[in-house]
Amino acid sequence: MGGLISMYAMCEYPEIYSAAACISTHWEGIVPTTENNPVPDTIFAYMSDHLPSPETHRFYFDYGTETLDKYYPQYAPIVDTIFKRKGYTEKNFANLKFEGENHSENAWQKRLHIPFTFLLKK
Image (cartoon, rainbow, N blue to C red; front, side, top):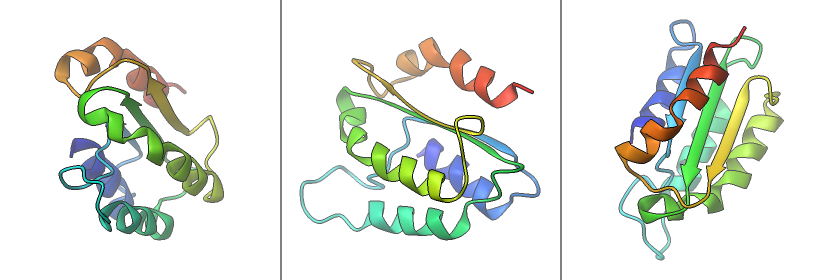
């Protein structure tokens, strides 16, 4: 849930936070299910209404394709569309897929340099 909390903090406190690394963001919001889950659509509606200015903020998202992360690729096009509609570009928004990676600290540790480099660049 750290990715969701980071995204939420940026949206609610844009004067405090200007960049967020949302690694393996749990768009499901609850235990993944094949039943009708209203949580992702609610998150996306919130994002559409609350994203801060792309002039002053950067977002990094990523996801793997194994374990819990296997539920996330289906949401990538939705997230990409929301950010593009709000004026974000490749300079201030990333949503990267890591094939074969899982939802674990070991997987995140291997790629942690990527969000750091993206978010801290001038």
